[in-house]
Amino acid sequence: SVFSPRSRVSGTASKHCQICTLADGRIVLVWNEDIISNGNMYSRIGLELRNADGSCPARRSITSGTGDAAFPVLERVNGNSVLVAYTETAQRKEHVKYAIVKF
Image (cartoon, rainbow, N blue to C red; front, side, top):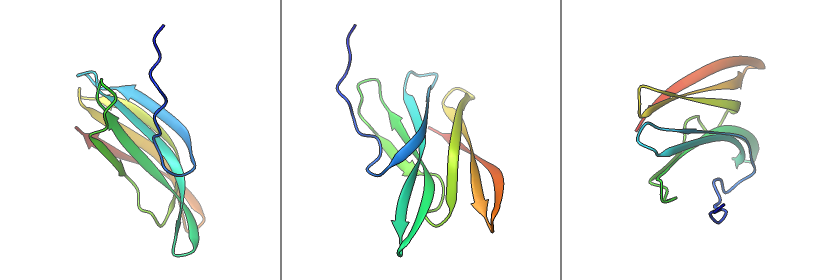
């Protein structure tokens, strides 16, 4: 077996990582990570695209940095798009939300 070296995905504490492969062989990862903004702690959903060689052409958050989003799940749809569903807490109530991300 051949293993590649470890590669950091998130610069902060991250958890609940999910991964899927696009139709063209690229890999998509999502996770939730804790961040501090204006002295308050929040949780957001991060997303990263990886090429077959391990390079990272895209990395971003799909939720705001001032809310609490967690437990992402990931599913490929329509070849090179993914659906990311997650739980977001607003005004002390949890809501299930989703985003479709196209590559």
